[in-house]
Image (tube, rainbow, N blue to C red; front, side, top):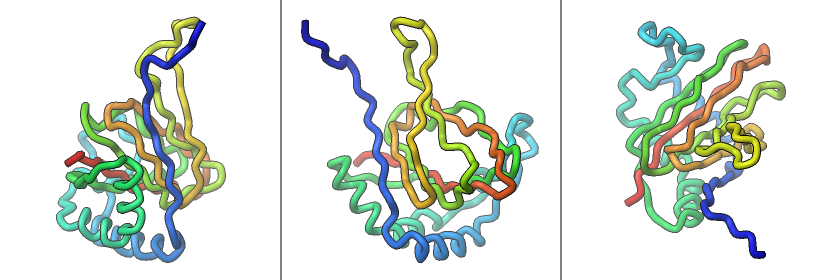
Length: 177
């Protein structure tokens, strides 16, 4: 008998080159794009600039992260554009409910501030386990300065931040060209 995988969900993890230097530049850049809680979202337990004007953020981000964007393009073997980019911060107790970013393309998460005891992103397998008939979860082990990339359609969430320090990410969607 031969076992093969019927489906495969790709994911990538990249360590940022010269992270401390780029972290300073990214943190300074985000000062122009302040985060806030959206009062219309009752279950939102984080702050973000996703509902604000983020004109120019993608271009400035790509300029700072040029080496990594080139590496990503080489790794996924195609070019891409960033149509949407935003930041999210989780204070103590902050979390993000399961969601995805659409049916096409890829989504990147850069872990800008990741306190030691804050949670990683949890991904949800899009089908139940064939033995247990249960939902399966996966976390990609990450550290501050890592980027994870998955298909935009994959449901994911962030468990509550138990750290007294703020967890902060930059997330973006990639449209394949």
